[in-house]
Image (cartoon, rainbow, N blue to C red; front, side, top):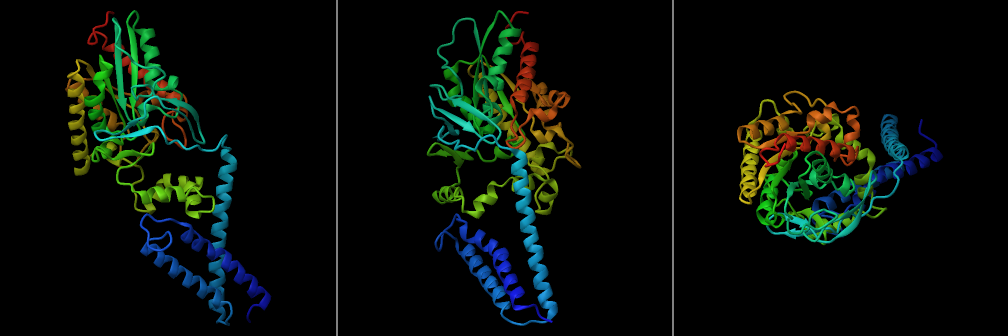
Length: 431
């Protein structure tokens, strides 16, 4: 017995609504390569094929089919519609529970391209950096580093510490006074009196060891450092393979491989009606991307930068560590050519606070560099042990951003201060 015309008509409209969602996704996307309107050839083919499928599906409601086929069609409709409804409900629930205090701002404008290191900060630039988790009044000084003051000629009796690193040294997620180089300055001036210290924050997002070594060679002399500290994070290993991985266009840090088409696609996805952009910004997608089970299902490693934590290193991990050591020696040589002492600061990622899985040890990355430093006569500290011993480990990293919070950066500064106090004789400081 076939369904009534009224029921069949309602089901047809539901099918048009439910199965029209993927088509809407396809037609509102903007691909990097263009062929027709805003799509590439493969994407255009996908739009045409899915449109043909949808038309065929809707046409099928105008004909009478065997009951089993109609039942299968109805099951597909119910399952697909239920899945979409559940995903929307989960996204709404996440947004209600998250309660963002303010909308995300455009954080571009502060970067300038550099042919040797990829990108640097625009001098004397000010702007508000804002996300769903933080709001920061950000500023660079006349020398193009993040600071609330300029560094002129070094005064007699002043010891200047230059902290070079990536985004975990730039600390853009907290106010400048809460960044670990700024907290370190206060700690050193408190614990190593009567010596006077000035600490320079030369952290730049996207830098790896290779970029830091080149930055020291090109820019560090202007600061006349007595000590150069290199901040290290697990992503350095992979990023060292691409010395100029990032550059800047129109004040925004971008991939060096990006094109104008990428920029157009990025701007297009900001539109509220672009379903591809809505999906990209969804909290549910962010959760899925981080879930180890989902990553395994998609054939991705359960965590990023696995090579950094391998107990038994494969050939790739050995090669990446060797490359990092090469660039580290370049950084050391560049610092020592300025008459500066050189040291390492290893800053932990949030996923290092948990067990990582077979053949993975979260302490391996820091252990490698502290052992390397000891064998090569360098100062070094790994903040991971202090992070793990903290009474509230979850308070040390942001949930979404994954960088350290002010509490985490303060802990990094305390560990670095302790290291410098222990090496005070090497620094020429009286006890």
